[in-house]
Amino acid sequence: MLENDLIRLLTQQCRVLPPVRVGIGDDGAVLQPSGSEPVVVVTDMLLDGVHFRLDEVSAELAGRKAIAVNLSDLAAMGCRPTAAFVSLAVPRSSAADPDQASMFLRRLYSGISDLADEYQFTIAGGDTNSWDGPFAVNVCLTGTPFVTSAQGGSLLLRSGARPGDRLLVTGALGGSLASGRHLTFIPRLEMSEWLVRHFDIHAMMDVSDGLSMDLPRMLAASNTGAVLESNRIPIHPDVDVTLSDSKRLSAAMGDGEDFELLFAVDGQTAQAIASREDCPVSVSDIGMVTAEAEFTLRGPDGQLVSVATAGYEHRL
Image (cartoon, rainbow, N blue to C red):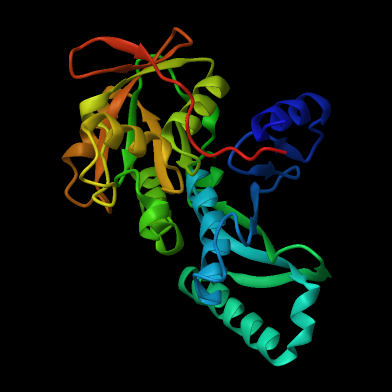
């Protein structure tokens, strides 16, 4: 079973009851008790050998990434972080060298604490266990909207894209794993706040599994399709320049671990964003949302081709 299959299964089987407003299927869940502002909850589990390799990267960077990927989910929901709960599964073999294990955990939490200090949230709890598998860290992070409902704000979900909307993406895509950028990327919280304070964003998500894997999730949630323009997709300099143009484009769309923001806005808003000199990061208009539930790419020759889903997906 693939991860997307499990998500569809759980969406069908798991009821959404108050105070939960949004359950499985978005970048985060939304809890909103009656009369209260919403609280967004995101979570990610990272494994040694899958999301990083501890024989190649520092404990600090592993800890940093565990927090950063969750911050990226909150950015996609238009939220600031408030509290994190960090749980660890430590290999039993580490008990053979307690001093080394202690040093590893201190360094891991140094990476975690650095981001908590930078983004002003609390490490409020968690759990620890030992087992015979590889090191694992799970982070659950809560957040609240940058703009409250009392201030006229609303939560950003994947499901609001409308036919005719423009699709915009921050930064550039591809090459994150090969370059190590997936360990050091900057979560787009500043950009998220700038967007929600100045513009009407119809839908937003982060690009974590690759554009060609993640965009269909937004389109499915919104019951729409899309046409992307191949010459508008921003390819990161980290993508191997010796590759052909088509392979560099495939890398940009399918490598994953970019943690950029993908969002849908009307055409007038897209132009307004492009004209603003105070935009925190670069933004590219890469295509249009369509009423037809197809995902296509316009190539250099002007021909439309269906986009095959590519990117990272866990096999369960």
